[in-house]
Image (cartoon, rainbow, N blue to C red):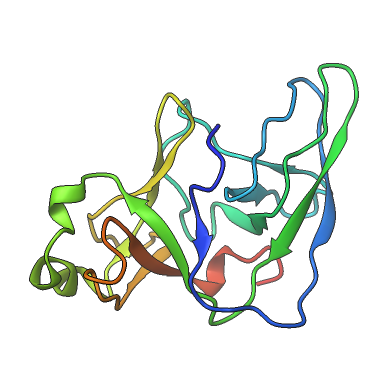
Amino acid sequence: MATGDILLYTPVDRVGTVKMKVTSGTTASIHAGELVLTSLGSPYVTVWTAGNSAKPVVATDYVAGLAMSASTETASAAGYVEVLPLIPGVIYLGNPDTAATWDTQAEYDLLVGDRVLLACSAGGVQTVLATDGAGQGLIVEPLDVSKYPGKVAFSLRYGLSPLA
């Protein structure tokens, strides 16, 4: 997995992280800067991998939040990760899956408001896709590409919250 795939664009004041459980079976599978998933009613979080399809899909995938630390699980023992929970109105910055789709302000502006997904490469890098779809969980937000070249601003739809 890759550290720092997703960054906070909107400052978040006075909100702490939550220590969440990670199942055993791998070693430090979650890195800071990755969106982490959970299941309804589960105390555990996971990161999606290249073996999964693009995510998150509203009412199918549930995002616990943004990992703020590396996870501590091992092959034989469960561990923990510090997660900044979903906060309404927070905007994140991610890397585009295909940079040429987003590299001019005009191209970027045409995608603002689209509902998109994140892909995960074989190396574990999470990147923002550019195809709009009704059930897709990220909303492309306005961004000045001259100030943030090679980045995509997005928010998460409320239907991704395990509390929704």
